Length: 335
Ligand code: ATP
Ligand code: LTN
Image (cartoon, rainbow, N blue to C red; front, side, top):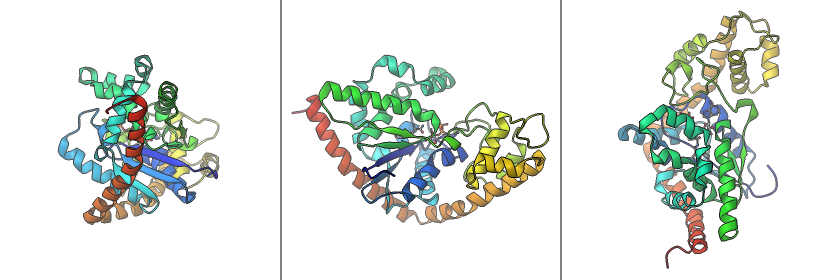
């Protein structure tokens, strides 16, 4: 990390079970950044429950998922001594700034958001104004803390571009207020694809359970899903003929064993698809078994989780409330 003070912010929606894409595209980067942290840097990881309700969530399940996502951050190695972990809806500064930004973001730019186009197509008449405004709330999350770097998967790139644009526009309308953040995308895991359809991304909201490996899947389930993963008409791993499905599986293998794509390809060259998938399954299980153990222990010790989330929220509120004061003054809100 550079010598300049970094403020890192990211979040995941508690909208379902976390999967390999969330881990490899987001959480693993966060853990790596934490290892390279310098004492002046700040890490903030949020459970973005207000974003989750842009698509209907069963209230009882949502409450449970919020705790589960928080426990999963910790089990994967985020250390509350280094990072603030908090629940988005517990800090009302996010919704406050979101409204102000709604009044700055051009409507035409919001219409171009590809995530909205995809999700609204799936929701049809269930599409809400919240789903449309989603990127303004995300911009608020990021801008409240003078965030410099946002580690995410590739699908979030456009939202971070919009965040920069809205920050720039606000600064030019009202005076220098927000820092322009940049994204950080791990190109080797930017877009983990569904195991059943290598042209669509692995996603919490995928209806086909065989498309995703969930971090809490039982070991035999993980192995079964990988065995069932679609490949192509070939029968053995060959660098001559790499289909999107095989490329995805090799990327996953590389990431869970800390090797490059090329290293995996070299050692697996010539292996039958069956043998390759068995090795991959064993590697995925070996990676997640210790995380699952830690996760279960954390959920049992529920007091500890609450303490961490309370402390996280108290700490971030100090930053965000100061920023809201500046925003009010700049915009002329209140007395
Ligand atoms: P949903 O299906 O509910 O929209 P999701 O599975 O896309 O959820 P998010 O909560 O939107 O997950 O994403 C959390 C983080 O995980 C983001 O940084 C996102 O870019 C990353 N991410 C999600 N899916 C993938 C994927 N398939 N590959 C790489 N990164 C991913
Ligand atoms: N939109 C993100 C989740 C998210 C987020 C953020 C990520 C909400 N606010 C701020 C980074 C920074 C997604 O992954 N779907």
